[in-house]
Image (cartoon, one colour):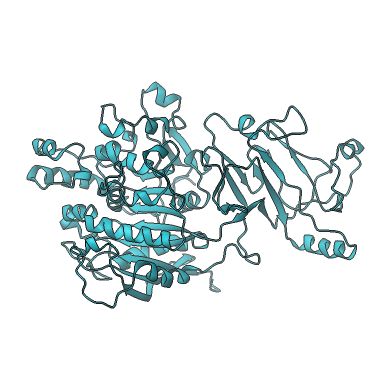
Amino acid sequence: VQNNGDGFNAVALMYYHATDDTFTENKSKPTNLLPARMGVASVECSVQGAFYRHVPEVRLFFDEQITVKDESMHDFFPVVSSNHISTVEALKKCLPYLETTDINSSDGDVKNTTITIKLNDPRGIQVEGHVNAITSNYYSTDVHEVVVQIVSKGKDFKNKERMRARRGVTSMPISPARFSFYGGTHENDDERSVLSDVCEEDTTDVSVDGNNIMATTIATGTYSNKNNTDKHDMAKEKPIPDDIETSKADTEEFKMHSNMAFAENRVSSSEPEVDRNCHLEVQGWLPSQQKEALILLPGLGNSMKKSLKCFGQFIAMTKLSEHIYPIIFGWPTASVITYRYACSAANDKRTVEHFLQLVEGLAASGIRRVHFLSHSMGGMSLIAALTNEDDGDKGHSRVSNCFHLCPGFEDEREEKENRMICKSIILLNPDYPLKAFVGRAFASMRRICDHITVVGDRNDHVLYYSSIVNGICNRWGHKNPVDLINGTPEQEENRRRFRFEKRAGKELASLVLPSNNNTSWKNPKLLLAQPSITSGVSIKLSKQWLDIDVIDTTNLDVNFDSVRHSAYNTNPSLVKDLEDIIISGRRAKNRPSLLHREGNIYSYNHVPSFVT
């Protein structure tokens, strides 16, 4: 930050350039016959004060050409040089550049102030961002209790520590809040499982967020009691173990009642003094030593340099670089005048093979959690990788087979421990046919990810013109890739006429289960994943909403371009909400920045710019 208040932030981004385009320009007719390139770039961005025209500015650290792992694909990727490296070797060179912050260092500034505990997964209890201290797994089936401690490291706390050390007193943090999930042993018969007493029928997350534990309000910090005269409260105080000596002036204990309606101060009857410099720790769980990966698939007509600028601005406006590896997958995005060529390139086998190499390379590098973020036509490339049936494994593509299946889909294939977890899929203004999305694409994504978000705008001009262009191309006989057709190619040929082809990113109210007997929806387990979304309105309208979060940005009017198609890196409401999705993993119904409208549709709690 400069003296005049102007602030800049430089972030490191990794890219996988799976196209024959140059770094700065795209070819009108897209191709990807040559081996891909991987590299790391530094992107300097304005983040506060005056935003300068010459930034974002991109500077390359290095760029390497990689080899093709699958020999069967050498016909698609002719070898032009023997001086190539593998994807895993390239990742070993790239990832250290992205280690800008050690989020797990005991001396670091980044501490957990939010702990999310998930209960509904058959694989076991999951503490977001943590692994079990004994098994080193993200899930645990043998846990009956999760203990969250509020630990203070403020100045007053350190001074008290010195005084206690002189007296030979052992240090002890604030007593923890205990969550018993499987009906463990309790002191009182009235106390029962937090899951049965607290969670509503459709609630599956228990969140500890700064000053709040679900409905229980506690002020996190170190408490001191100056006027403790309540002998009745003192009589009810639990005995302190013999191996720990502590002073009531230094520690407080909070008892979580069975209905979780409040937390009472069990020692002090006066207003406590709070030290806000504190964080949360989970006993028996360790912060994951491995960052997660966030892979962006850009939209139509974006060169790699332009994609780095846009994605870099988004990362620079958040704290995501402390938690994730930001990666761009550059596919042949072509240009506006060759729109249908770009559709074919997004669904091409070579593009899918490149994407598979990147995903498998991340898995081999030890990364276990991945987020996918696509913009506009980038969603076509992502969905094609998840639906391409090239291995005969009950319809799952090789990319999908790199990930664990979601609960309810486990019997579709044999699960393996070394598979990755797809934490979230975010589709920004997806330029994808509505019928194909509902009839086929959603089922493919939902198998591996239970947190899918579609961000759209009902006034998106780009998607409006896309509907018209696709209708004209259909009339002229320009064939769509099979994955974008709702039916068979023969049926598509018989419907050769102009028709307004609706796009998923604009028709937000139409993201509901199909009423016909499409073969993609014969799996009843997919339908069982829907009940948490339904509401009184949806039942009244006889709609079955897709199990996704639909975010309507139509009413946002700050930092939006005139075509209302790309604002994920500039609009503050959208930037912070996307950051919340990736870091906390909370669904839309649990994010305070959103207002529920109908079914699975939400909008931002935002005041228009004209209101003063």
